[in-house]
Length: 252
Image (spheres, rainbow, N blue to C red):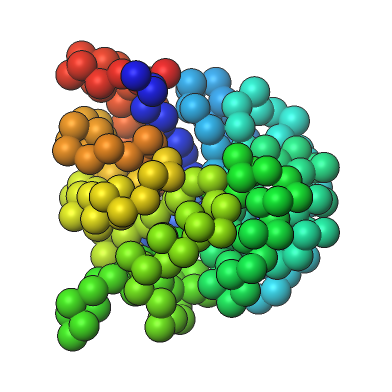
């Protein structure tokens, strides 16, 4: 049986880790290198580093920060945010990234997924999806630009498309659940898992260790990702893993 993963996420804006609620009201959390070192020692299974300043304002990639972050880690590092060319991916992999997360650039140019997957291997290419439920259409739609711009792409259509194009993994954030800490969006995640065979990282809504138990017992996602509960020390990754083990969930 594949062991479930617990992954903290660093949303980095202008060189600082920030966190909001439903992608709004960002507050300063700390320095990415210090947090990366903390999570490495906390037995995180991976670390996701999203440069949200890059996607909002077209900032230069913070390669020095990324290199320093990678140097503190003995776990896989996924980097995302404003990556739009094969050269961007090469540069990040050369500065310590193990995987690349694509969102806006993939939606704008789906063939980029195929090119990246063929050049670097599908294990390197994670597609990040910011999903929001639209009441009028009774469906989920993909958003870009840090959750600010809605696309005309249905989430359930998009996941099937990216699987065919060679993506290796999905990072699915429920914008409706993000930062609310009331549990993960099981309905959205189950719908996705039913139509693709890619590993899915669930993001948005993790508020306590029981939410991770519920997530892994009620859906077949491969990993649970959270930010604020770990940043604010409301719980720790080790505490979550201990709770999961007691509840019979196979964790790393």
